Amino acid sequence: MKKIVLFIFAYFFCVGHLFSQTPIYDPTRVYDVVTDADSCYLFSMPKPCFDVVRNGFLPNTITVQEYVPSDTVVVYGVAITTYWEYIDPFHDGQTNFYALINVPRGHINLTLGYDYLMETVDTVTFNRAHPRFCWFQYSDGCSNTKDMRAHCYELYFDTPDRINVMTDTFYVGYKKDLDALVFPQVYGGQYDNSLPGTLYSSGIPLEGIGDTVYRQLDYYDQKLWGVAFPIIGFRCGPMEEYWVDSLAADSALVRWRKVEQGTLFNVRLVGSDGSDTTYVTADTSLALGGLADTVRYNVMLRKQCRYTTTNYDTTVYGAWLSTLSFGHGPEAGVGVAAVQGEAFFLVPNPARERVSVVLPASMLGGRLSVLDMAGRERMALPVQDPVEDLDVSALSPGIYLVRITTARDVSTRRLLVLRD
Image 1: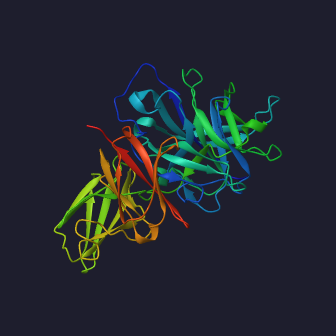
Image 2 (image 1 turned 90 degrees about the vertical axis):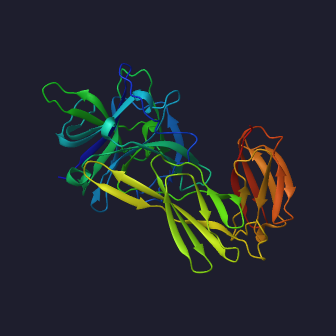
Image 3 (image 1 turned 90 degrees about the horizontal axis):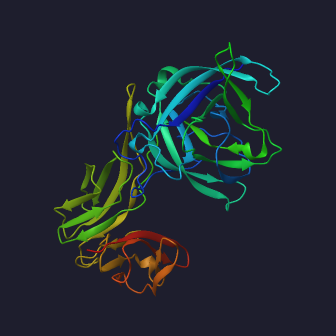
């Protein structure tokens, strides 16, 4: 008989005991975007054609998704794509998450249609589950128009190497308290009703047996791909953008946006004179000094991510972002950065009154536009010079998109406009 193991990502709403802590999701930060092309999660295959939906909630207390590994995997945690409309589930202790690992005790046939018994073999509570936030990009492989970026919360087990080594069919999912005041919504890919369902639900213990009884969810609106994913590797995604905030004859200030809390950054400065220096910082900016006016420099940036529990301490690194180059020689001009490749950058950023858009030669002749976050064009002009100076004093404070459109490409950078 196949060995079937069940992981449960569970939660309930607590109204009596509040914790004071930093929210896991902070809208001012940039988080990783995980897709089904990544190797940090395990995915159900083959993936059916689906429509992305956000369900109100699925029935009963526990809902789990089936997974069949092609090789031995260690399940470090569970990622669940869920959404609370009115609360941050991890802020101030409003929601307490815990995870369970279950194994089947046998197969039964009941008139109500329940047919699986499961036994809990491991648990982890929110307080020691090392929760993290990211985005998961649901994309239908049959149509590039059906996609949705979903909130994704990750919980990590304490001792996965000792217990959570899977070689056969297993399940991951979540548990909810039916007495909760707020129910989350879950994301998933709803697929053709003619295909079998892979979600199972429970919450009704049988008297005298003591185990939780599960049944297969087989209604058309309960056939979802995704919902919860086993975490089988550690993610550390690439940085999205960085820019030169200020540039002088012998120094430069490089900035980037905040990402997941606790992340370190590696900044590598490579000069055309053979110099090569790497800096490690927890800040979102780095002052580079002692630059020579005859040397062209390439600045590279990546994340350094640490995962630690009572059982392991692992550091992984993201891919290098390498789109920023500048120099102070005659070919670049005094105080102007020469951009390499298809990148452009904004100086300064954040800006208050004016911002310079520094562009590579390949973008000259294109069109520059400034859009608000609703997609409305607020400013537009043809790109004629390597440095275009924009007056942003009439824009309201907030985040805007600066877009360069050429005959072969579209490049976009975020601009933050501030007011004193």
